[in-house]
Length: 263
Length: 270
Image (cartoon, rainbow over all chains, first blue to last red):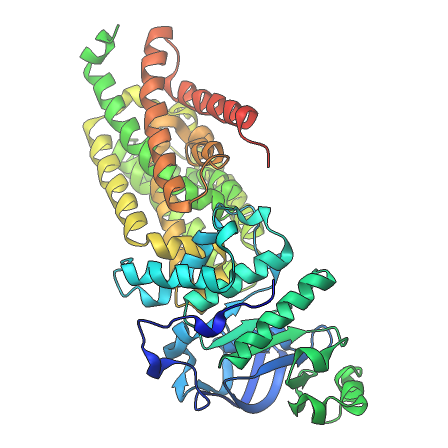
């Protein structure tokens, strides 16, 4: 499985200047998210550029998925500002790819692997949604980069969990996304599949993409992520994994919520 | 063998099943893949209060009165359920169940105030051979609108059906599509009422897609092939019902049901 060729994935249509670079910055300032009267996230502040694989850590209900959905532009009723490369999220739809939890998807949906990767081209098709030759080229390149050539004709229910994750990442590549938001991608995967996926995510980060990954299992966090954002309905800690992923930080992150004084 | 086609009522019936069969079959793909099969069945019952009220107001039943009454009633119930579900007050299926049973009960009460004897058979089971030119024009207009909306938004629909949250993250106007789908379902339902009636109308949406789902792995192809199956089955049903001298609406649904069973038996195993 090793040796994905995401580094050579062409972004032909947008040109070299649009390759994800360090100056692409995800900036979150004073973010609060409420569902009715319930406060799901409080006072989130961080900024990070491309080339990182960020683990969003926290217990169930800590706000990991809420943050991911907010960054995907799915929560409209927020206060605070979230920008990508200085643009509002509404103006950066093509550059941010959202990969929901596997359980959320219907495996019986009548779509092949190629069909799912093709969905990634949607934001680039223009107002008339006309399919062009360049779209086919980019889809082919994404399939090749993720080594899915042998699976292109398969239905989604015929794939293993690991294969399905690769297909979704190929969709994100076809979207030419700079930011990938992955909700619990490791859940339900066996150990070899987890290893394959972590290698792939590392490759993507090394090649200039920004990955934000919801993760609830504390095993192997330093191996999976270079940066962590620890949440407990508010921000407990954010920074390089070797600096902030400490026993104290973990204790605060997984403490009962009334014990977290500053949240 | 085909001399039944000399009669104008059979010609009108044929034209109607071609239109209604195609538009309902194609729209049915959205209904099935969105897992709204029960919602469409429920919606068909919510037409009653509108029809009853229209009969009270206009003092009788004409195709236009029935169409407008049913349309207003179903739109109110259908769009209210989308609104209630969107606000997070109830899930879509529960909201539909509550609103349609209430609407149906209201319709039954209103029937007591309709002047003269009320014959509900044609409303319940349809009478495709009784279609008038006005019905055909309504079918033509509604089917054209449905097919155009499906074709124009084809890529939006696929993403929306696959996963609304992924669709919304990519800029698909998901709330607008929710309302649009309900609106189209109501329009198609009201139009097919005269042909197959409220009880059987849901089958015209559901069975073609359910049959082809075993064979076709592309939502877009599924949509157009379901339309073709709906139309084709309609034409065959008109011929069979004339030869056997039985009800056309029931023949059509039974024929589609047989197609589904055969498909289920011979489809490749998953």
